[in-house]
Structure formats: structure tokens, C-alpha cells
Amino acid sequence: MRRAALVLAVLLPLAGCSGVNLGPLSTEDVVKAGSAVAASQREFTPEEEQQLGRVVAARVLGTYPLWEDSARTRYLNLVGQVITRQVGRPNTVWRFALLDTDTVNAFSCPGGYVFVARGLFQSCRSEAELATVLAHECGHVAGKHVLNEIRRSNLIAAGVSIVADHAGGGGLTADLMRKIGEKGAEVLISRGMSRKDEYDADTRGCRVAHGAGYATAPYEEFLLRLAGRMAAESGGSFASLARTHPEPSDRAKRLQEQGLIFADGRTLADRFTRLGR
Image (cartoon, rainbow, N blue to C red; front, side, top):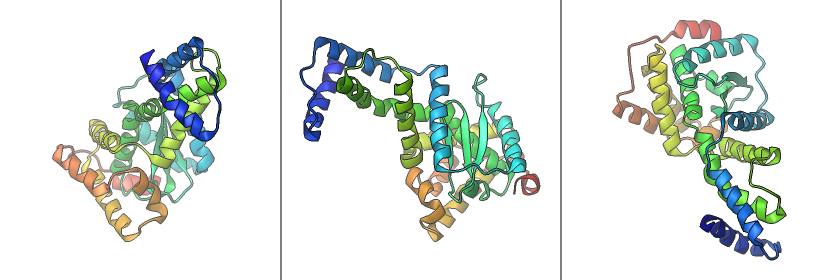
């Protein structure tokens, strides 16, 4: 109840600034707000994660079209399925797709939806690089990074919904799930994850990729190559990556310090050139 009261104390001045008259708040309103706060802070169920993932994935596809290349998409999924066996989420149905954009970036949505932009795919030079990129994205899903961002940002949004329309209950209705998913898509596409989450996904990704039999030294080369290209070609296809990720050279340095750059393992540059590029 104290947390609900705090939310309402924050919301009321904001409402006044926007010219919205909420009127008197009853005890029932405060209880409803408390239920919304509790709902926004609890763990999402696997079913809710899937539902949110579909909303976020739809928004990604509304921003970038699919790259409808069946051969490359099949190859992407074959590499992805090798990686997901090491992620530790046996009940997740993983889906991998390519986006038809020069943007050098990738996006992972709750529930196992992973999108790789054509610009990033074509920046890879070996299967090991691609595999570790996919492992990085799977690391975001396994770490629930988008869900955590949603949880951190949804506290006030849930209170606004309850106070503004006095709707019953604080449960995750279909409409609220849609709104939450749209918030997740905004975070993913526009702001990206926190630096901490990006570093965590790198750590998870290198461990997963090496566990799947790939060398991770090529991923270090990939990051340093991106750093050089970003310095030479500021903006353009790198604008999204620069806005949503830490400096690639800093990421490579941290992986070296963690001892996660492994030279042993498969690189498969020839197979990537033959089947991917």
C-alpha cells in the first residue's frame, strides 16, 4: 500500500501539469493501483513472455521488413539451433530471421525471437562470428534483459492506467499486455539495453558459442572491425548500433579481461562464405 501511495503521489503532480483532472481517489482506487504495482514488478510467466515477445517482434517487423532470402534464412536457423542447445532454455521455441536493412544491428525479443539485420549479417566473415552474434542475442533472452527493462519502466505506466480510467483489477489483461509489449519494443529499437546488459550478453554469448564448439577469437576480431568501421563511417548504417550499444572496442577489451576469447574451436569461414554470404 505504501508503494501504491508513492506511485499516486508521483502521478498526481504529473497529471496536474498535463491538465488532467483525476478527481478524488477512493480507497478502492488505491487498492487497484497497489495491484497494478505488484503485477508490474512480479516475474512474467512463460506464457506472458511469449505473448510479449509476439508484440515486440511484430513491432520490429513493422520497423524493418524481412529479408526474404530462403537459403540464408535456413543457414541462419541451422547455426541458431546449434547455439540454442547450449543456452539452457529447453522449453523456448527459438525463431531466427533476417531483416532487409543496411543497419548493422540485431534484435532479440522475449520468448526467443531473434532478428539479424542484413547489414550485420554481411559484416560477418565466418560462421564463428555469426554464431557468437546469435549467442549474444540469445544471451539477452536468457538474461530476460528486455523483460527487466519493461519491469523497470512499467511501474508508473501501470499506475497511470489504473488511476486514469479506474479500470478494475491489476491483472495483465490483453490490452495491458499489448501496451507493455509496445514499451518493450520502444526500449529495444530506440534505446537498446543498458551497458550492463550488453556486457552480460557478450559474456553469456562467448560462453555459449564456445560451448557449442566455436572459437570466440573471431568475435573479438568482429568487434574490433566494427570499431574501425564506426570510426571511419560515423552515422549511417552504424547509427543504431552506436546509439544502443557500448563501444565495440570496450566490449572486446572486457571479454579479453574475462578470459573469454578462445582460439580453439571451429571458425568455418569457408562454409559461411559458401552458404551465408
